Amino acid sequence: MSISIGCAPQDEGSDPRQAYYDEPHVIPMGVPYKGPAIAEDSPEAVVSADECGRGRGIDPEGACVRLATREHEFGGMVQIPAGAFMRGDIPSRYDAGHTRERAYVQHAGQPLFQDHLPSYWIDGYEISRLAYAKCVDDGTCTLPVCLDGTDGRPTEAQIGTADLGAFPQTCVTHEQAQTYCEWRGARLPTEAEWEYAARGPEGWIYPWGHDFRDELGLALGPVGYDPLDISYFGLKGFGGNAIEWVADAYIDDANLSHYLGGKFRSETGPLARSWAAWKQGLCGGEDCELGQRYVVKGGRTGARAGAWQLAPGQSIVTLPTSNFEGDRAVAQHARLGFRCAADLEPEQPILTVPVPAVPLPLYRQEGKYDMFLAVAEVVNREEAVRYCSVLRAPGDPEELPEGGNGWRLPTLEEIREVALWFGGPGPFWAVEGAVEQTYVDTQTAEWGPVEANDDEPLMARCIRSH
Image 1 (spheres, rainbow, N blue to C red):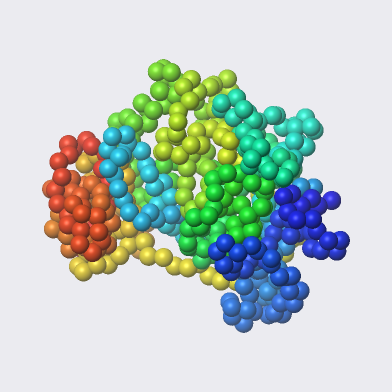
Image 2 (cartoon, helix red, strand yellow):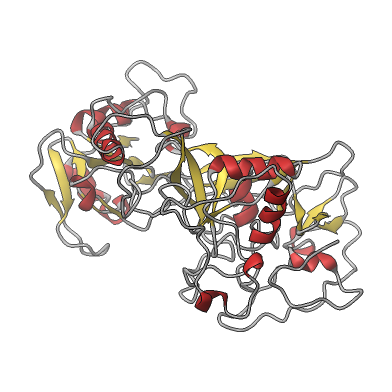
């Protein structure tokens, strides 16, 4: 039985997979989607990538085929083709102004790095309340409760004429999400699997492309309800609706670690002190072990946040208005849901993506300098120097040479030479001390010194001479 949650009723004989999968099309902003029927014919063999578009894959015989689907009672899963893609998220500007007061990593999604995944299954949209309730009725799952004691249900105005059971199941802990997926014979997706399914091989910033949609609201709707929130592979709900748990533990510098030959943060540095103070506040001024933070995904495909799976018997004494990094997903939140993934069965034909990953530069040659595009956030002066010394860019030796790979903090004069690409306003650490843009305009901005003590949490970007 296939249930179309939150979608228009289907005609008898229509494609049941439309409940959780749409053939991706370029859709004008604000125009209701009335998608054409999916063509049954496709090229027998692929001659060029243009012949095998979005929502399709290459089978072992080289034919271009629609992505395989696997139904379950409350929707279905889509087979994501094996392929390479660029992970991560690059901000448009680096502003450390407000993190000087309370140190935290704003841009945990940077820098970019290439990853490769085998083919796998993933749900076409988030787990609905109705689907989760079936697991509760079975005695396997437990009732979800938000940190404020509510069940996170939308308001009557938000529900409107829709069925409450069609909305995403939120307020779940990471453990509850994992239990549900296991009950269904699946698992939570890894961060890489979630991101690849959301953005595809072309490095899209959002599931539907590179442009932000300002009509995308923050209120929850039925799963799969937004006709424009369709990813490269035709899946729904990655950009809007619920944000989602994934399997990975949250680490601030997880993406940055791909380019490091050693540690650069001090156990007594600005970030460590800030984190300890914030956590102590959650524990009512006492030291406590709250549990484990896991990655939360949603919106920008490469962005990363973290939320708590609280330890057994542990609670947050004082509910904060926001998370450590400024978002609201502290733990089981009224917008925090999930979807499931699964490994491919041995007998399932492996599909591959029809287009290669879009290559993106990771460091820039500008004049007589190489400039690495990743930035270390909330570092004191000593940590900034250490960061450059352990940096390992693409093409650098796998083993870090004694003395590093030549990366170093720039001088103020060198920053002025590459100002158009350096990315401000900062402040950043330079050889002379702290520097920042005095006027935030990429064409006319001037860089100059700014007063800061050596232990302040600023940013660091590294260069090296040719």
